[in-house]
Length: 492
Image (tube, rainbow, N blue to C red; front, side, top):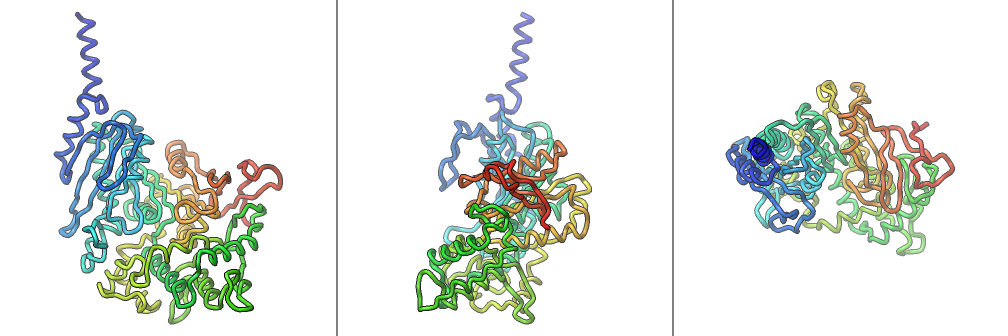
């Protein structure tokens, strides 16, 4: 009888833990009592289908929590937290967004869940009705604040409370991972809320928000000017000429340019000499390419406002004409918030209009403060990465931020930057773009092992990428796809 009682007590103890399969539904449903929660339910069966989306398979059982938070009278921040039932690694992962957000990112939620994290994502408070865009928030500065900085912090505080209530204890470590807009979220968290996360990963950060949108508009105008448009074949022509001229700058002939800042390719060498041809560029096209390399400049004094795209990224420039039309400029809502719903992109002036945007939005949207003192003082770690062939957010701006932070205070014990040759925005491109920055920051936070290099794979390649400003140098022998054939060294 005693053995049976002990057995039953042990069984009861197991079944009342989150993840037991019996009490877990009640534990999940209890989260509905939390302020802002709109639903809380267990998702079984290894598959989840977002509303209007495709099924996501191979998921572990999890408690799905949805919420709407209203930190201001004009806020409506949607949040989801996914809590693994039996596979929790005792960590929380906040995840970032792309573009103007406006919806939950289910891909990052699924990836984090599969790796054992309790994971959270937000629409950043910019949800819009079908057929509308974020231009509806002209005159709504609280929505700009939600998108710029507030929603990510609100998501983080909320997710930590959900974790504690569901599991009965706080997570051991907190991490954030994001790219593009998510990279901006990463830097905003490190700067404004330095204790939200123990470790942060920020890829291709659009952290100088006003600058990056002015940059995209500059490139759009250059490549859409009369007679300047470049077909896919013309972009391939330019890219192949650039790679041919600068491939060996890093000592390896592999179709990749190690550091394109050392590439001096002049597109004028492709200028047509005997009329138009698909194997040459017109004068207007040469000018467009040069303007895109140069980046936006102040129309009043020639001051550099933002870096240009790097040589070697031309293969990806076609995203602008493929995504946007002459009638509607890229990310027009951000400009409309400043200049009104009737703003026309052709009228934008890279002088006074830049000043106006800075005055109205920079304090809300830009994460450019190099002061990381509190983040570093408390032992937190930041890993940044950026593709050299990024066609959306010029990589030079990330280097500018890294250098500014390093000039202000020693950051080597807390911040690493990795530059990926041939890689476009966040991933993809001609180079190997698959890396494991979250693993690197976890090892740094929990084991004290600072990442000096990351392994990058993809497109049949294996390379190492070194902690900036070090660069991988080929030893002159051995397989170029073997990471041991390279060493990290400082550029001379």
